[in-house]
Amino acid sequence: MRGRNVFLDSLVAHGVDHIFGNPGTTESPLIDSLADYPQIDYIVALHEGVALGAASFYAQATGKTAIVNLHVAPGLGNALGMLYSALKANSPLIVTAGQQDTRMRLRDPLLGHDLAAMAAPVTKWSVQAERADELGPILRRAFKIANDPPCGPVFIALPIDVLEQETDIPPAKPDRLFRATRPDPEGIRAAADLLAGAKAPVLVVGDDIARGGAVEQAVALAEALGAGVWVEGLRHQASFPTSHPNARGPLPFDAGAIRKALEGSDCVLLLGGPFFEEVWFAPGSPFPDGARVLQFEEAASRLAHNHPLDVGVIGHPRETLAALLEALKGKVPGAAARNAALKSAKEAEEAAQAARVKKSWDREPISMARVMAEIRAGAPSNAVIVDETITANQDLFKTFTFEQPGDYYSGRGGGIGQGLAGAIGAKVAHPDRPVVAISGDGSAMYSIQALWSAAHHGLGITFVILANREYRVLKHNIDVYRQRFGVLSNKPYAHMDLAGPHLGFVEMAAGMGVAGTRVSKAADVAPAVAAAVKSGKPHLIEVLIEGKR
Image: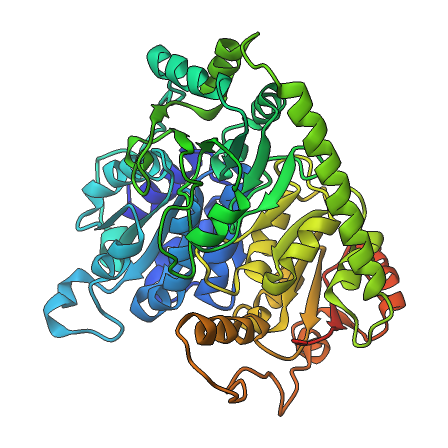
C-alpha cells in the first residue's frame, strides 16, 4: 500500500468527510488520489489562511477533528496566523503540508524548509513523516493529541516521496478513548461549601461549557446560586443563553476593568476557559478584594495557571457541574432574591440599550447600534451568526440573542480575518441553517478570498461588511495608549484610514462570483439581509456605517 493511501484511509477510518486546503505540487499524491475517496469533500481556498480559518470554525461547530492541507514552507507561513488563532481557540485540527522529496534535503530545494520547526510554536505536536511506515502510527497519535484536553492543532509534514513509498503498516484505526472524567468528590464538597456560603457569587463561563455540552447545567447552576454569569471578552461559542436574566455579558480586557465588572462579588467560579485574554496591563488581581476564586477545568494544566485558587477541580464540564448541583441542593439561602435582582438589572440594561438605539436611530452614516438592530430584523430567527465586528461587538451582543451552542461563532486569540474564513467552515458544518457573517471592512480584507470559496462550493452565506473605512479599533487603542502612558498628543490617527482609494467590496465580490449590494440608508439594511438569505446563494452586503466619533 502506498503512503498516500495509508494517509487517506486513516482519515476515512476516523470519520473525516472534509479536507480544507490550498494544494500545490508537493500535495500532488493526495490531490490525485481524492477521486478514489468520494466520501471526502475537498473545500478549496485561494489562500492558506482561509483554509485553516475555515477548518478551525468547522471543528468548533461540529466537534470533529478538521483536516487542513497546505503547501510547503510559504504556504504554511501564510497560515501561521490562523494556526495561532486555532491554538488559542482549542480547535482540534490535523494540519498537513506537503514537503519536498527527502532525497533533496541537503540540496536546499525550492520551497524547502524545516516545516515541523515552523509549526511547532503554535501546535500541540509537530512532526515530519520520514517513512511511509510512520504514517499510520503518526495519524493515530495526531488524532489523539488533537483531542486531548485542552484540544488543539497538530502538524504533520508529508514529503512527496514518503507518500509514494510502499508500506505494510496499515492505516490507523480510531482509538476508543473515554475522556469524560468525573470530579473528585472532596473537591466538589469544598466548592459547594464556599458557594453555599457566598452572598454574591458569580460565574465566568468559557467555551468549554458549550463544547462539553454543559450549557443546561451552567444555567441550572446560575439559577441555583442566584449568580450573575459573565463570558470571556473573546469567545468562540455561545456558552450561556444571552437572553437569560442572569446573563451579564462579556468581560473587558484588562485586570482593573474586569475587577470593576465583578465588583461586589465575594465568590467567583471560573468554568472551562483560559481566563483571561487581556490587551492592556493593569496592576492587581482581576478579582475583587477578598473574593474566593474557584476553577473547574478538564485539563490540569489550566488549573491555577494564571491565578491562585481557593478550590480547583478537574473533570468533564457536564459531569462536574452536575455533581456540584447535587451537592448544593437545599444549601443556598438567598438565591431567589439574587435572581430577582439580576432580572431587574437585566431589564434595566435592555432599556438602556433601547434608549441608545433610539438616540442614534436617525444618525447618518448609520450608527452601529442601529445597524445591529436592522441586521437582526432582516436575519431569520434560526440564523447562525459568525462575528468579527470588533468595535461593534457590544452592540451585536446586546441586540442578538444566542440561546444555544451553534447560534454564534467568533474568533479567539485576537488575530483578524477569522470571520469571513470562519463562515466557510460554519456553513459546511451547518448546511441546513442560514449563516450570516458580520465583519468590519479592515478585518474582511485579511481573508477576502473566502468569497471565492463560497461561490465555488455554492455555500449560501450572507456576508455583511460594516464599512466605516477605518481601523476603528486601532484608533480607540491609540487613545487608550496615550492615556495609559501619559502621552500628550493631538496628532492624527496615522495609517488607520481605509480611504484613498475606498475599498469597493461589492466590486470585489463580483470579481469572485458573489452578488453584492451596497447600502447607505438604514432602512435598506433589513430588506437587503432578508433578500440575501432568501436567495440561498452567497451574497455580500456592504453597509456604510459611522466612523469613530
